[in-house]
Length: 391
Image (cartoon, rainbow, N blue to C red; front, side, top):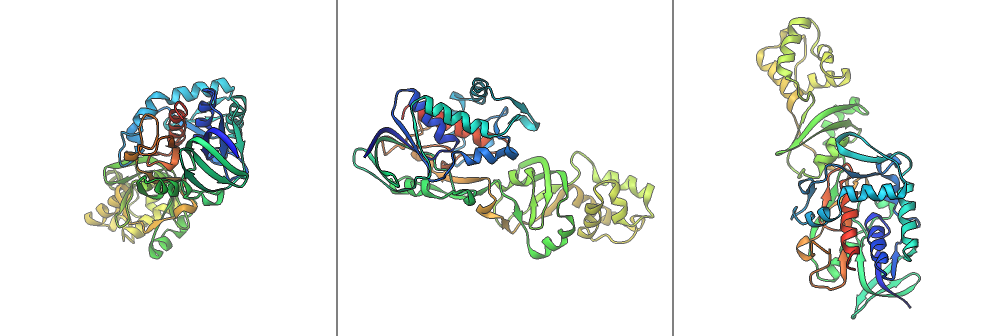
């Protein structure tokens, strides 16, 4: 039987970071993952460049039943602390829009650095090793493909159900239930939205078109790229709003952000009133979209022939297209898992389960989900660091 001080389930960002911190304290640490390679989400993130954090980290940019829960860890190990770690590793990076930070080179640099730090701190890493079950009798006993492991502390960093093709499962949620912790119902987050057959058919000619848009649900708004797909809508603005959207409710899309569609239509009518509406609108939005907006607004014929209510209907579509999603693409394409281990059952400072001493939950398995753009990696670093100080 392998005996360790700390067993970490999950060799992703949070698990490796927690393991490094614990091992540097002199703890005997073992990281176990059923995947053949470590930290695959890091490797594929940011188009292979790893959007490893964001300069704009703030608690209101994280979704949770208790948005304040993340504050302790995020304040004690900040984005600047992780940037310093990147500097120590000698990994060059650059800032893109909205405070997003990316590696200059491949994301595998970050994976290699984490694994190297773990080795140098004396930690072990078992990959391709499934865990069949966990029991607790004063120590945590893990039945693994490489034999039984006994650990004083157990850190669960198994993530959620997003990206199942990479091996994601609900194992961490099952463990939480087993030990009596509550769950906030998991659902896909940062995921494309899908639409009814009729609406999808009306958008078929727009597939592949990308525009800047403001997408809103309730009082929440995101201004970023929007992408029309064969299934519905995607792009950063849609992925962001998907985490807030609820079934049965519409979203609003401003296709002309910071522009007065009604005013520009009136001006366009004076200059190009003889043109068909779909053709004239190409002066305001991309041609393919222009033709479809005319259909959505039910404004055939020439622009000059439109009456005031018709023009207003066009303006409403351009500045406030209201569209009802039928659902999302689900776990298959979701970048993160919303919901998870209920924060009421965790200590915000240590990430330890309140009723089970020595049991910790960190990263995506917890009911804390960040915006797109490096926020979820920062939660992984911060929550992993917090658990690693005490596990």
